[in-house]
Every structure is written in C-alpha cells, then in structure tokens.
Length: 152
Image 1 (cartoon, one colour):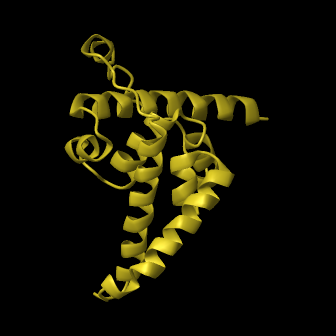
Image 2 (cartoon, helix red, strand yellow; image 1 turned 45 degrees about the horizontal axis):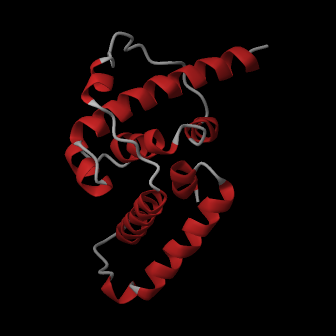
Image 3 (spheres, one colour; image 1 turned 180 degrees about the horizontal axis):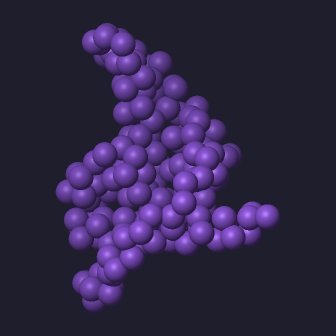
C-alpha cells in the first residue's frame, strides 16, 4: 500500500491502484517463476510500479520543462535535512506535485536511471533529472518545515 500511496499521494487512489495491481498479479500468476526468497515480493513490486506509471501517464500529470527552466536548477545546497520516521517522509512525499513524486519514487526509491524514467514516462531525460532535483528541494523544505512546526 505504501508504494501505491507514494505514487498517488491520495489514499483513495492508492487503494484503487492496489486493487488493480492485485488483479493484474492474479491474472498473471502463471508467468511468475520462483527464484528464491524475495522473488515474489520483487515481482509484485514491479507490477505495482508499472501500475503506478500507467496511472500517472493516464492522468498526464507530468509536465515537460523547457531548457530555460532546467537551467535555473542548482545543486548549491547539498546538505541533507534531519531524519524523520519513514511514515512521515512517505506522507510528505505524497504532498509533492505528481510529476515530482513519480520521478522521485522511480529514481530514489526504485533505483531507475533518468534514461529509463524518461523512456517510461514519455518525457526527456533532462526533464526527469530536473524534476528529481526540484522534488528533492521541495521535499527538503517540507521536512524542515515539518520539523520546525513539530519541534517542541
């Protein structure tokens, strides 16, 4: 459920995505080959990731950025924000714009390259990279804001 929630940012849509993913897995179970411990989990994760990508593509949430927009992105502040529990970080990721959220999940959490993300989401590789940088910056601000408002 957390994977679906990370991509949709909305519990109701995440439940729909989870349902559709399980239906797809059930219908394709004969294609699964056991390859040792963890293989079923990896297979299911891939199905749910693909379902999430299809969900995002169907809703056209990704925005192409022009080259002039990507030139303004900088890596000046590389410091990491303080750590928070995973549930809080997942909640904060869910508040990111859908395009940022998708690229952040695929690059940072799923380990995809920007080339693969671009191919899968039908965007340019530079768009994937810039959305990732913008997502990181936005998430960092949200984490710092969360810490400042919840610090007693």
